[in-house]
Image (cartoon, rainbow, N blue to C red; front, side, top):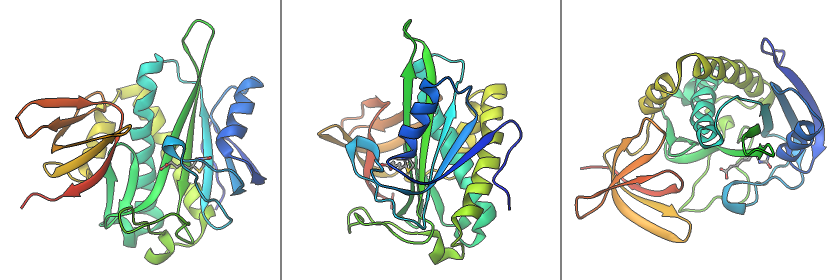
Length: 253
Ligand SMILES: O=C(O)CCCC[C@@H]1SC[C@@H]2NC(=O)N[C@@H]21
């Protein structure tokens, strides 16, 4: 199956440091965007919050370079665009995983509570402060669970759900990413938010959110129209969280 979508170019590399770095280099060289860079292996793959992303051959490592004409503060919404696109791709190429697939705020996909993929957004600014480019780095565990999974942070891979071909996952992902990017540009965040909410993990549940070094407890009240997590605190106040990650979910009884 070809890895292709209308208007997009695909660059395939065997071994890189990080596909996000490759995409940043293309951006600095003036690439117009709508470029997906895929590598078989990364030697210095990175995750959110400075974590390492182990990237030997067998899983999917790719970065999309975009030049969306939008204010930098809105670019973070692409993490949800990417999550819903990837979920649609997994529905298609690993249907056995579909019923168990959830979106964990802000942008992890999980299967039955174990992490399947991670998304790392990076951007570059113009001298006037506007958004120059956006890079969406995506790692999907296809053939194996990489080092680093623990009891507190379990992980899974698609091979356990009937799909072990990173090419098939990349092909489906690009089609749905292209589609969701177009839809986001034409219709705004509302359809993305609805699709994300259809698979939201922990809505209404007691959760722990990590913000830097601080951890906050509360109830996951809502997913805002701006992508924020609304956390109801034990004292009844509501805190709007725009950046952080859910580290624990206790389902409502
Ligand atoms: O911490 C996370 O959950 C995000 C992980 C993102 C990993 C991907 S793999 C392709 C791209 N290149 C990188 O170095 N990181 C991202």
